[in-house]
Length: 346
Image (cartoon, rainbow, N blue to C red):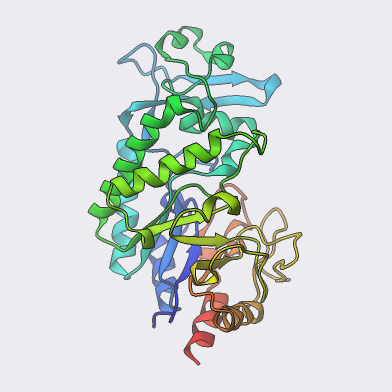
């Protein structure tokens, strides 16, 4: 039973999740889910899982390169070498895609993640910040062993700096190629919760970067319908594709300047906000509640009544009840998704 409109479950670290991923996929498909949204780069998860290998020093040895400066909140932070692919990562990618394919599920693949830019370890382990090819000279004294700095080609401009655009464009090409190879329906999100980060609102770097990423997707023959946006609305709605409005776990929506037909409502981040989730039984380790089945049904009805045809995304917070950095898919609660599917069926 497939939901009448797009229905998505958000599991960012699905490739490395605890629990039975196949049983989770079947359960999701059984209640009408179309897509699972995943992060293709997990620098923040309990298990570091990125498409490239951790750097080694010297070349050919087994001495891994880290950044380490506890006084600055950086502890054994892995440094990536973007010239070498991680066979472990791509094996987990292929294994997970095969499971989704078996149960008729597609994927919304996030190329990047704004939330990784906050805590120091997460930020510096993010490949576009802390790889041999993308690191800033500000972090020279963080390297362990110290001699590993000689392997680096330091660049400026921060996360959105134009000196890194070639690496981003190559990443888009690699991601699209492997998603096509997986043989399942897919959409691509440019960056989860895109924002200006520490740039002032008058800065042009973030806007130029985002335009470049949209162009890179189009250059790889990604259709408008496959592009997904979330975050800074003023920038994202300039471009075609689905806009995902986060922090909605009740019937309602925040002001939106675009066409509501392209909206998807998401319960991601729906706590301490106007349309907060209200479950009393399904709660993450950090105290973030899930959407209730009743509220999920009300969201589904609201979406249809208001011409919101992009669908709904559910984040089942119970999967993070044991560990906020490592989900357990055995704790997935299908009831909100089932409530949405049944409401749309009426």
